[in-house]
Amino acid sequence: MKEFKCWKKCKGLWQETKPLLVLVVILTAVRSAIADWNDVPTGSMNPTIVQGDRVFVNKLAYDLKVPYTTWHLAQWSNPKRGDIAVFFSPVDGQRLVKRVVGLPGDKVELINDELFINGQRSKYEPLSADIGRDVPADHDGRRLYAEEKADGTPSHPVTILPQRPAMRSFGPTMVPPGKYFMMGDNRDNSYDSRFWGSVDRKRIVGARPWWSCRWIANIILNRVGIGFSRNCFERKNGI
Image 1 (tube, rainbow, N blue to C red):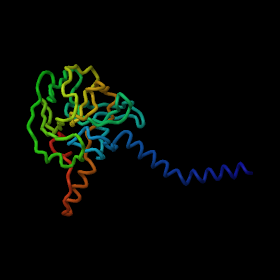
Image 2: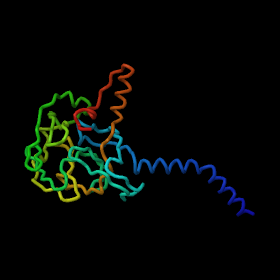
Image 3: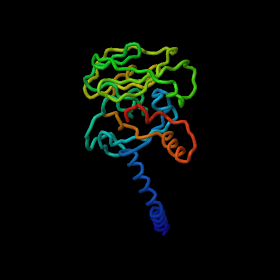
Image 4: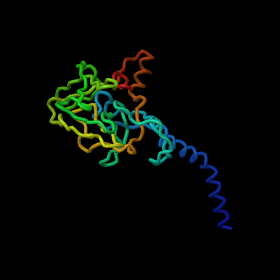
């Protein structure tokens, strides 16, 4: 009799919680395979993405994966040079946000903070310091901003920190097949492929952040006539 009552109680509990559990499974599956958000913990992508921003990620940019896994069901594209990609770090598995600067087979070189792809120097134009108005104050000293444009890719802003010790020259190095060379837009304050090498294609979660919370808030507040400091996410970043 006790067993029957226990079974009846468990069955009732299951009937009550089943809709909630189904909803949780659906939502987590969507986050795993279709769309997700990523909090940016560092300033390695300044001024394009500012630390503390939450960026929304399109996980269908390149392929479709089985939810909760890295198994590919279908693939229709690969990362392009200039894309902002979200991937698992080859060092500790942490999710990172960086820019794709080198494709499989590319020769990547950095000389005094100037990027060379396959021997071709990227083009640079100075930018006003106003582009970094959303970047939090730090102890890195003076910041310099420039618009960088590699051959065949959209232009985007980069940050140089002249007073900070940094790896301003690197390579040349060849990007192996099936891998991608990632760098932060904050060139002198980014832990990226210069330190731990190129990233396997299978480690790339998706990419192309659609927008940031700061950008959304700016649109809403501007609609109602309230000024708000805008992230430069939607400006010269090729998205």
